[in-house]
Length: 404
Image (tube, rainbow, N blue to C red):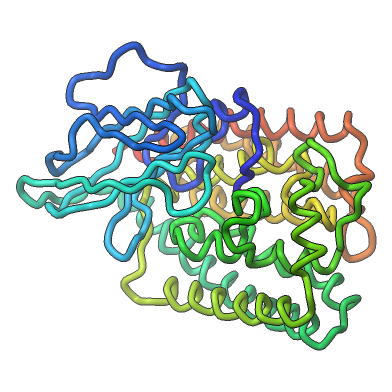
């Protein structure tokens, strides 16, 4: 799950995995004709109109609040149809979502990027339309990727059971040894997992998503905090530091009975995710698929390289490697299309992946990786720069592969 602690500059650069034609810019002075202007503040979400026509619907989201915000469009069963995240104060996010069925939908602003957000109805009328068709080669590649996602989820379910069994049995050394490996399966397929707005936070939320403990803290990172209890010396203001309220909450609530409940619920939530994605009619947006390679590497650069993802265990390098695994898999599925249209770009992407992979592998230790808090700042900066360069190359992929 994405970081909830980012700077304004990072907010403008950071884009979410399941975005549909999303972007973040300086605040626009005016909105284009036909675009729905959304004004998000710390306690409101105002739409210029609550009505739209079927087809591509454009949103311009102005953040007039003091907190970083997000904007979501939800379809049936609360599935995310499109989102733009990490819109810093004073900035504007843009989003285009294709809605082909007339109905009433929900949109939400999430100031502070926590909870269910401030929801509003959006009534879409007009004739039912056919969804824009992607090239057949992209559709085939997406099906291949879906098979990969289902395989990873099966691995996640089995590994999560082993991990949580160890937690509940009190075999904490075994649980600590399993933590990074277990999360690997989730991090590889994050663009798909994030399309479930209830399950993704339940499984992968951080303390930053709890609004200082007013929202329940669940999932992997709650168990991580129990396994690597924070200390007073860990408290600070940096993204990788532990908040004072986080420490106080841990000392008060991380009891064995409570943690056993969290472990059991994590198993249940992972099982629900596996069931949902295994359904024969499960699908995800083509734009999410073709933007997935960039979204996964942006996850590292924009929201993880500071060490905030695994701030208690410092097992971040497992997540980095998994995000790269997932991104490379997506590109492998798209490689025939990219190579046919722009072989130079494919060669460049391949070389950039290899460079990053070599860097991450240089931190291998035994069956895992060194603790991320031992990685020098200059090494983190170098890795971040390489990921930024790869992200630039991957940004060309959606337009290239969707050309008819």
